[in-house]
Length: 233
Image (cartoon, rainbow, N blue to C red; front, side, top):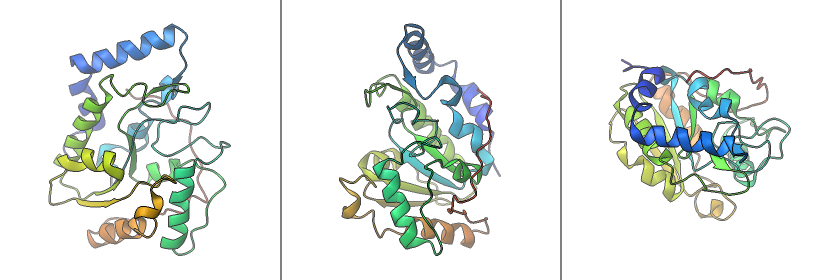
């Protein structure tokens, strides 16, 4: 049985000092004219699109893209009309080899995955324009450690796709035998050839879900129709 909701989880975190520090720092930087990505309304979009009782697959990224119009609250994903980044392009290359009939889409918007239960979670949720990892010390890592612990407590089976050492270190909290962890190199062009290509994580995730009696993920993205979202938190 699911234990709580994301709303319950946020209620348990927002009053804590670390979370207040994050909120106050990001707000003050925005108020001072600093450009912060993603837009405020999209910071928690991954949780809005993928409710806790819907999560089937967890994909961990690091921090949001720091270029204009790229980040929109989902790890690895970019807004429609934005050039597909190299790591995501490599993910599509792997999908073409792994999933029968998959054809790389023109858009890097992964909203359709999120709506099916793929939690596309960055471990840091904001970034200054043009300055990668600039918010990595604000407390976001504490927040996402709590998210991972909450996911670990869920008894519904989930698959964790942990690409690269950063994601794998974050995944050390996952010890619930109901869940499955798949690890490989990161899809970045710097490392994809060291084990990401050929990992078959997308089909393996679906095989696990099928075995557990859960609906598989349609990875195709060809019919993605993102909906306008309003912030819940």
